[in-house]
Image 1: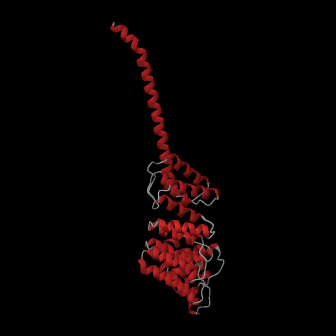
Image 2 (image 1 turned 90 degrees about the horizontal axis):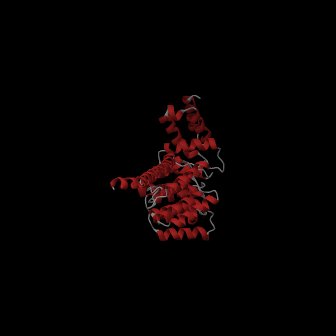
Image 3 (image 1 turned 90 degrees about the vertical axis):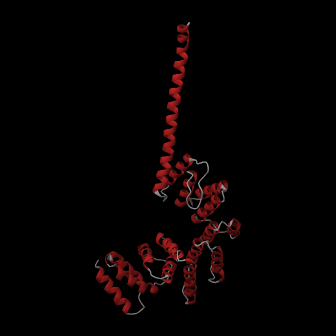
Length: 327
Protein backbone atom coordinates (compact mmCIF):
# COMPACT_ATOMS: atom_id res chain seq x y z
CA UNK A 1 0.00 0.00 0.00
CA UNK A 2 3.05 2.22 -0.12
CA UNK A 3 3.77 3.50 -3.64
CA UNK A 4 7.46 4.42 -3.12
CA UNK A 5 8.16 0.97 -1.63
CA UNK A 6 6.36 -0.74 -4.53
CA UNK A 7 8.40 1.23 -7.08
CA UNK A 8 11.62 0.48 -5.17
CA UNK A 9 10.84 -3.24 -5.33
CA UNK A 10 10.21 -3.06 -9.08
CA UNK A 11 13.40 -1.06 -9.64
CA UNK A 12 15.34 -3.74 -7.80
CA UNK A 13 13.79 -6.46 -9.99
CA UNK A 14 14.68 -4.54 -13.15
CA UNK A 15 18.25 -4.02 -11.96
CA UNK A 16 18.50 -7.73 -11.27
CA UNK A 17 18.02 -8.66 -14.93
CA UNK A 18 15.28 -9.72 -17.32
CA UNK A 19 14.20 -12.95 -15.66
CA UNK A 20 11.16 -11.72 -13.71
CA UNK A 21 7.54 -11.53 -14.80
CA UNK A 22 6.41 -7.89 -14.55
CA UNK A 23 2.66 -8.60 -14.49
CA UNK A 24 2.45 -9.05 -10.68
CA UNK A 25 4.66 -5.97 -10.34
CA UNK A 26 2.23 -3.96 -12.49
CA UNK A 27 -0.64 -5.02 -10.20
CA UNK A 28 1.47 -4.06 -7.18
CA UNK A 29 2.07 -0.58 -8.62
CA UNK A 30 -1.63 -0.15 -9.41
CA UNK A 31 -2.82 -1.32 -5.99
CA UNK A 32 -0.29 0.96 -4.29
CA UNK A 33 -1.69 3.90 -6.26
CA UNK A 34 1.65 4.63 -7.92
CA UNK A 35 0.01 5.61 -11.22
CA UNK A 36 -1.85 8.39 -9.39
CA UNK A 37 0.70 9.57 -6.81
CA UNK A 38 3.95 9.09 -8.77
CA UNK A 39 2.84 8.96 -12.44
CA UNK A 40 6.19 9.89 -14.03
CA UNK A 41 8.25 7.26 -12.20
CA UNK A 42 5.53 4.59 -12.53
CA UNK A 43 5.31 5.27 -16.27
CA UNK A 44 9.10 5.01 -16.59
CA UNK A 45 9.14 1.63 -14.80
CA UNK A 46 6.33 0.30 -16.99
CA UNK A 47 8.05 1.37 -20.21
CA UNK A 48 11.29 -0.30 -19.12
CA UNK A 49 9.65 -3.58 -18.18
CA UNK A 50 6.84 -4.07 -20.71
CA UNK A 51 9.24 -5.91 -23.06
CA UNK A 52 9.50 -8.64 -20.39
CA UNK A 53 5.78 -9.46 -20.40
CA UNK A 54 5.39 -13.02 -21.64
CA UNK A 55 2.39 -14.16 -23.68
CA UNK A 56 0.11 -16.74 -22.14
CA UNK A 57 -3.28 -18.27 -22.84
CA UNK A 58 -4.82 -17.07 -19.60
CA UNK A 59 -4.44 -13.85 -17.61
CA UNK A 60 -6.71 -13.14 -14.65
CA UNK A 61 -9.24 -10.37 -15.05
CA UNK A 62 -7.68 -8.17 -12.36
CA UNK A 63 -4.35 -8.19 -14.23
CA UNK A 64 -6.10 -7.51 -17.55
CA UNK A 65 -7.79 -4.46 -16.00
CA UNK A 66 -4.38 -3.17 -14.92
CA UNK A 67 -2.90 -3.83 -18.37
CA UNK A 68 -5.64 -1.83 -20.08
CA UNK A 69 -4.68 1.14 -17.92
CA UNK A 70 -1.03 0.75 -18.86
CA UNK A 71 -1.44 0.76 -22.66
CA UNK A 72 -1.93 4.56 -22.91
CA UNK A 73 1.20 5.11 -20.78
CA UNK A 74 3.53 3.35 -23.20
CA UNK A 75 5.78 5.68 -25.12
CA UNK A 76 6.39 3.85 -28.40
CA UNK A 77 4.28 1.98 -30.93
CA UNK A 78 6.13 -1.33 -30.54
CA UNK A 79 5.46 -1.42 -26.78
CA UNK A 80 1.76 -0.64 -27.32
CA UNK A 81 1.50 -3.36 -29.95
CA UNK A 82 3.26 -5.89 -27.73
CA UNK A 83 0.97 -5.32 -24.76
CA UNK A 84 -2.12 -5.35 -26.99
CA UNK A 85 -0.84 -8.55 -28.56
CA UNK A 86 -0.45 -10.20 -25.14
CA UNK A 87 -3.97 -9.26 -24.00
CA UNK A 88 -5.56 -10.19 -27.32
CA UNK A 89 -4.10 -13.68 -27.05
CA UNK A 90 -6.60 -13.97 -24.19
CA UNK A 91 -9.40 -12.63 -26.46
CA UNK A 92 -9.54 -9.47 -24.37
CA UNK A 93 -10.13 -6.06 -25.87
CA UNK A 94 -10.76 -2.88 -23.90
CA UNK A 95 -11.70 0.72 -24.58
CA UNK A 96 -8.13 1.72 -23.76
CA UNK A 97 -6.88 -0.57 -26.52
CA UNK A 98 -9.39 0.89 -28.96
CA UNK A 99 -8.17 4.34 -27.98
CA UNK A 100 -4.57 3.19 -28.54
CA UNK A 101 -5.53 1.97 -32.03
CA UNK A 102 -6.99 5.39 -32.83
CA UNK A 103 -3.96 7.13 -31.37
CA UNK A 104 -1.52 5.13 -33.51
CA UNK A 105 -3.67 5.68 -36.61
CA UNK A 106 -3.63 9.41 -35.97
CA UNK A 107 0.09 9.28 -36.83
CA UNK A 108 -0.77 8.39 -40.44
CA UNK A 109 0.70 5.79 -42.76
CA UNK A 110 4.15 5.81 -41.17
CA UNK A 111 2.78 5.05 -37.69
CA UNK A 112 0.51 2.29 -39.04
CA UNK A 113 3.45 0.75 -40.89
CA UNK A 114 5.45 0.86 -37.65
CA UNK A 115 2.68 -1.06 -35.91
CA UNK A 116 2.65 -3.75 -38.59
CA UNK A 117 6.44 -4.01 -38.73
CA UNK A 118 6.50 -4.43 -34.94
CA UNK A 119 4.33 -7.54 -35.33
CA UNK A 120 6.64 -8.92 -38.02
CA UNK A 121 9.59 -8.28 -35.72
CA UNK A 122 7.88 -10.13 -32.86
CA UNK A 123 7.40 -13.14 -35.11
CA UNK A 124 11.02 -13.02 -36.30
CA UNK A 125 12.08 -13.08 -32.63
CA UNK A 126 10.07 -16.26 -32.12
CA UNK A 127 7.29 -14.56 -30.17
CA UNK A 128 3.64 -15.48 -30.54
CA UNK A 129 1.53 -13.02 -32.56
CA UNK A 130 -2.24 -12.98 -32.13
CA UNK A 131 -4.81 -12.56 -34.89
CA UNK A 132 -6.35 -9.82 -32.73
CA UNK A 133 -3.18 -7.73 -32.92
CA UNK A 134 -3.11 -8.04 -36.72
CA UNK A 135 -6.80 -7.11 -36.81
CA UNK A 136 -5.88 -3.97 -34.88
CA UNK A 137 -3.55 -2.95 -37.71
CA UNK A 138 -6.36 -3.55 -40.23
CA UNK A 139 -8.53 -1.22 -38.13
CA UNK A 140 -5.76 1.39 -38.21
CA UNK A 141 -5.62 1.13 -42.01
CA UNK A 142 -9.37 1.72 -42.13
CA UNK A 143 -9.06 4.75 -39.89
CA UNK A 144 -6.57 6.36 -42.29
CA UNK A 145 -8.81 5.42 -45.25
CA UNK A 146 -6.22 3.11 -46.81
CA UNK A 147 -8.11 0.09 -48.12
CA UNK A 148 -5.05 -1.22 -50.00
CA UNK A 149 -3.01 -1.38 -46.79
CA UNK A 150 -5.93 -3.04 -45.01
CA UNK A 151 -6.17 -5.70 -47.75
CA UNK A 152 -2.42 -6.35 -47.65
CA UNK A 153 -2.53 -6.72 -43.87
CA UNK A 154 -5.50 -9.08 -44.14
CA UNK A 155 -3.60 -11.24 -46.64
CA UNK A 156 -0.61 -11.25 -44.29
CA UNK A 157 -2.64 -13.04 -41.60
CA UNK A 158 -2.20 -16.31 -43.47
CA UNK A 159 0.58 -15.40 -45.91
CA UNK A 160 3.08 -14.00 -43.38
CA UNK A 161 1.95 -15.08 -39.92
CA UNK A 162 0.49 -18.48 -40.83
CA UNK A 163 -2.80 -17.83 -39.03
CA UNK A 164 -6.45 -17.97 -40.06
CA UNK A 165 -8.61 -14.82 -40.27
CA UNK A 166 -11.43 -14.76 -37.73
CA UNK A 167 -14.77 -12.95 -37.66
CA UNK A 168 -13.11 -9.81 -36.29
CA UNK A 169 -10.69 -9.83 -39.25
CA UNK A 170 -13.61 -9.63 -41.66
CA UNK A 171 -15.32 -7.01 -39.48
CA UNK A 172 -12.23 -4.81 -39.67
CA UNK A 173 -12.11 -5.26 -43.46
CA UNK A 174 -15.81 -4.41 -43.73
CA UNK A 175 -15.24 -1.19 -41.83
CA UNK A 176 -12.23 -0.28 -43.99
CA UNK A 177 -14.12 -0.96 -47.23
CA UNK A 178 -17.18 0.92 -45.98
CA UNK A 179 -15.16 3.98 -45.01
CA UNK A 180 -13.64 3.93 -48.50
CA UNK A 181 -17.19 3.55 -49.91
CA UNK A 182 -15.98 0.66 -52.04
CA UNK A 183 -19.28 -1.21 -52.16
CA UNK A 184 -17.92 -3.85 -54.56
CA UNK A 185 -15.28 -4.70 -51.95
CA UNK A 186 -17.97 -4.80 -49.27
CA UNK A 187 -20.02 -7.34 -51.23
CA UNK A 188 -16.88 -9.39 -51.91
CA UNK A 189 -15.95 -9.46 -48.21
CA UNK A 190 -19.46 -10.56 -47.20
CA UNK A 191 -19.30 -13.31 -49.82
CA UNK A 192 -15.95 -14.43 -48.38
CA UNK A 193 -17.48 -14.56 -44.91
CA UNK A 194 -20.22 -16.88 -46.18
CA UNK A 195 -17.94 -19.08 -48.29
CA UNK A 196 -15.38 -19.41 -45.47
CA UNK A 197 -18.10 -20.55 -43.09
CA UNK A 198 -17.22 -17.78 -40.65
CA UNK A 199 -19.78 -17.50 -37.90
CA UNK A 200 -20.92 -13.94 -37.31
CA UNK A 201 -20.16 -12.40 -33.93
CA UNK A 202 -21.71 -9.25 -32.49
CA UNK A 203 -19.01 -7.07 -34.01
CA UNK A 204 -19.52 -8.60 -37.47
CA UNK A 205 -23.26 -7.99 -37.34
CA UNK A 206 -22.72 -4.37 -36.30
CA UNK A 207 -20.33 -3.66 -39.14
CA UNK A 208 -22.51 -5.48 -41.69
CA UNK A 209 -25.60 -3.49 -40.60
CA UNK A 210 -23.62 -0.26 -40.66
CA UNK A 211 -22.40 -0.95 -44.19
CA UNK A 212 -25.88 -1.75 -45.50
CA UNK A 213 -27.32 1.40 -43.96
CA UNK A 214 -24.55 3.45 -45.56
CA UNK A 215 -25.64 1.88 -48.86
CA UNK A 216 -29.24 2.91 -48.02
CA UNK A 217 -30.25 -0.75 -48.06
CA UNK A 218 -32.55 -0.52 -45.06
CA UNK A 219 -34.39 -3.81 -45.55
CA UNK A 220 -31.16 -5.82 -45.82
CA UNK A 221 -29.79 -4.09 -42.73
CA UNK A 222 -32.97 -4.82 -40.76
CA UNK A 223 -32.84 -8.49 -41.75
CA UNK A 224 -29.27 -8.70 -40.44
CA UNK A 225 -30.33 -6.91 -37.25
CA UNK A 226 -33.20 -9.34 -36.72
CA UNK A 227 -30.77 -12.26 -37.19
CA UNK A 228 -28.45 -10.75 -34.60
CA UNK A 229 -31.31 -10.27 -32.14
CA UNK A 230 -32.55 -13.81 -32.67
CA UNK A 231 -29.04 -15.17 -32.04
CA UNK A 232 -28.63 -12.87 -29.00
CA UNK A 233 -25.63 -11.25 -30.73
CA UNK A 234 -26.99 -7.74 -31.10
CA UNK A 235 -24.82 -5.61 -28.84
CA UNK A 236 -25.37 -2.11 -27.52
CA UNK A 237 -23.52 -0.52 -30.43
CA UNK A 238 -25.84 -2.18 -32.96
CA UNK A 239 -28.92 -0.99 -31.07
CA UNK A 240 -27.49 2.53 -30.87
CA UNK A 241 -26.89 2.46 -34.62
CA UNK A 242 -30.56 1.70 -35.39
CA UNK A 243 -31.97 3.97 -32.67
CA UNK A 244 -30.10 6.94 -34.16
CA UNK A 245 -31.03 5.87 -37.68
CA UNK A 246 -34.76 5.72 -36.91
CA UNK A 247 -34.58 9.09 -35.13
CA UNK A 248 -33.18 10.54 -38.37
CA UNK A 249 -29.81 11.37 -36.79
CA UNK A 250 -26.53 11.19 -38.68
CA UNK A 251 -24.23 9.08 -36.54
CA UNK A 252 -21.74 6.23 -36.86
CA UNK A 253 -21.03 7.27 -40.43
CA UNK A 254 -24.66 6.57 -41.37
CA UNK A 255 -27.19 9.15 -42.55
CA UNK A 256 -30.40 9.15 -40.57
CA UNK A 257 -33.66 7.92 -42.04
CA UNK A 258 -35.35 10.47 -44.33
CA UNK A 259 -38.69 9.76 -42.67
CA UNK A 260 -37.91 9.18 -38.97
CA UNK A 261 -39.79 6.47 -37.10
CA UNK A 262 -39.59 7.79 -33.53
CA UNK A 263 -41.87 5.14 -32.07
CA UNK A 264 -39.61 2.40 -33.41
CA UNK A 265 -36.51 4.18 -32.11
CA UNK A 266 -38.05 4.43 -28.64
CA UNK A 267 -39.09 0.76 -28.70
CA UNK A 268 -35.52 -0.29 -29.55
CA UNK A 269 -34.18 1.95 -26.79
CA UNK A 270 -36.44 0.29 -24.22
CA UNK A 271 -35.54 -3.16 -25.55
CA UNK A 272 -31.83 -2.38 -25.14
CA UNK A 273 -32.41 -1.14 -21.57
CA UNK A 274 -34.45 -4.23 -20.68
CA UNK A 275 -31.62 -6.45 -21.95
CA UNK A 276 -29.06 -4.52 -19.93
CA UNK A 277 -27.07 -3.56 -23.03
CA UNK A 278 -24.57 -0.71 -23.03
CA UNK A 279 -26.08 2.13 -25.05
CA UNK A 280 -25.02 5.73 -24.46
CA UNK A 281 -27.41 7.30 -21.97
CA UNK A 282 -27.87 10.43 -24.11
CA UNK A 283 -29.15 8.30 -27.01
CA UNK A 284 -31.67 6.58 -24.73
CA UNK A 285 -32.80 9.96 -23.35
CA UNK A 286 -33.27 11.44 -26.84
CA UNK A 287 -35.33 8.43 -27.97
CA UNK A 288 -37.55 8.65 -24.90
CA UNK A 289 -37.93 12.41 -25.24
CA UNK A 290 -38.89 12.05 -28.90
CA UNK A 291 -41.68 9.58 -28.19
CA UNK A 292 -42.90 11.74 -25.28
CA UNK A 293 -43.17 14.68 -27.68
CA UNK A 294 -45.26 12.52 -30.01
CA UNK A 295 -47.60 11.65 -27.11
CA UNK A 296 -47.92 15.31 -26.17
CA UNK A 297 -48.61 16.31 -29.79
CA UNK A 298 -51.25 13.59 -30.13
CA UNK A 299 -52.85 14.67 -26.85
CA UNK A 300 -52.92 18.32 -27.98
CA UNK A 301 -54.37 17.31 -31.34
CA UNK A 302 -57.09 15.22 -29.70
CA UNK A 303 -57.92 18.10 -27.31
CA UNK A 304 -58.06 20.60 -30.18
CA UNK A 305 -60.19 18.23 -32.24
CA UNK A 306 -62.58 17.71 -29.33
CA UNK A 307 -62.84 21.48 -28.75
CA UNK A 308 -63.48 22.02 -32.43
CA UNK A 309 -66.21 19.39 -32.46
CA UNK A 310 -67.89 20.95 -29.40
CA UNK A 311 -67.77 24.41 -30.99
CA UNK A 312 -69.24 23.09 -34.23
CA UNK A 313 -72.07 21.34 -32.38
CA UNK A 314 -72.89 24.49 -30.37
CA UNK A 315 -72.88 26.58 -33.53
CA UNK A 316 -75.23 24.18 -35.30
CA UNK A 317 -77.64 24.19 -32.37
CA UNK A 318 -77.68 27.97 -32.16
CA UNK A 319 -78.30 28.50 -35.89
CA UNK A 320 -82.15 27.95 -35.93
CA UNK A 321 -82.64 30.42 -33.06
CA UNK A 322 -80.59 33.02 -34.83
CA UNK A 323 -82.55 32.52 -38.02
CA UNK A 324 -85.88 32.94 -36.14
CA UNK A 325 -84.68 36.13 -34.54
CA UNK A 326 -83.67 37.44 -37.93
CA UNK A 327 -87.14 36.78 -39.35
